[in-house]
Image (cartoon, rainbow, N blue to C red):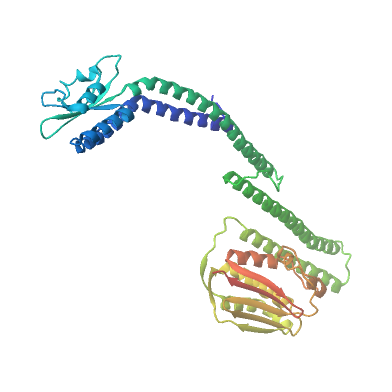
Length: 451
């Protein structure tokens, strides 16, 4: 059976483990290499001291002062030996040297000529001695002796003190690790609960995490996601409700008219013809509504892939004008086209959806003998139709599905209110800037490809 360890315990164990591993490595390195490192440092220092002694060897007073300082500062003594290993010296210098040397060092004079560096232990109680010999050009020797008793004496105390400090470090690390881990895991638990709430469609505005690190950033991103999902869900509910309402009305019309014909309650031929025409017209409206709903569903699909190509925009616009030419002729609308920069890299089919709806919208809402202008300036395509008695509109809401301006109801123009929502999504997919501009005499939709 697999043991489950929560995140808090994992962080706590990892923290303690890192500290224990670090301390263990320190102990092992100290145990194996501390003595060698200390001797290595002593050797390097002894070489410098011998070099300095060589420089001032022929200056007795300066030499004596230096040797005395060396003895006090470094606990080292310098011995000059002849080629046979006997100590040499003159006057005060010789007497000082004799006094400085203890007997155990002098007993080693016979060995000193054998090698340059070596460690000797004359007796267990006296400790180890590091000796450095350097042969001079005249055959005599300089022998520098340094006691290692201090490192041998304090090694045990150092290890003991390290153990004590390690125990204190572990206790502090355990406490701080617990506090730190608890803080992290409590915030992660908040994120976890927030994710569960969002999965249950319980959207939240504030998780309650105030941090400036990655967890704080994740919290803010989840809050943003929650808000956007909430807006999307509300939009979807409204869309479904509006779609149901829009479908219910033509279905009810068709149903009542069909029942009237079936029950033969309509006797007059002219009246029956009106019923047939109403059913047919309503069927067309339902077909258009369903087609638009399917289009919105398709272009809002997450897996929709654009098929971009170099497209002649003027050609698309003229195709749309030909498609809705009957509205133009019926209302005697003057169409003006001024386009210079014709081509854009876009998805042709998606942009055609937008242009079809923009052209249809412009022609439908143009008054009798009105004007519909399509103008391109510096890559900005503007579709402007003239208006009469323009009513106030909410430009933000006009893009939403099933939204229709007051002019649509006043003028009695047929429509589903889905056209501009299709335009908006199609232009977004083609990476366009777009907008609506309205004044008392005209209504304009424009778009321009982003750079």
